[in-house]
Length: 115
Image (cartoon, rainbow, N blue to C red):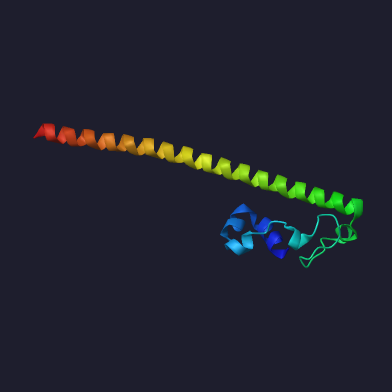
């Protein structure tokens, strides 16, 4: 569970930087047991409400899952926006460099005409 906390604290980039075996933190039945059914086998109980199990434990587990899914969606949205901005920047840079190439070609042509 500590790896999961580290992943979410460091964000999506931190998760991608981890080795494959540490990234495979899916909540499988062998690690957590059934969500909301009390303490799992992962070493940590997840807090007193989740340890107690029952309706409150299930509700807490569902809220936690919702929170992390929303957080992941937000991080992916921000990552997409960042990449779109990068693409836009590079397209503008390409246009600028193409104009520079044309300007230099024009200068070369003028030099050849002077000969």
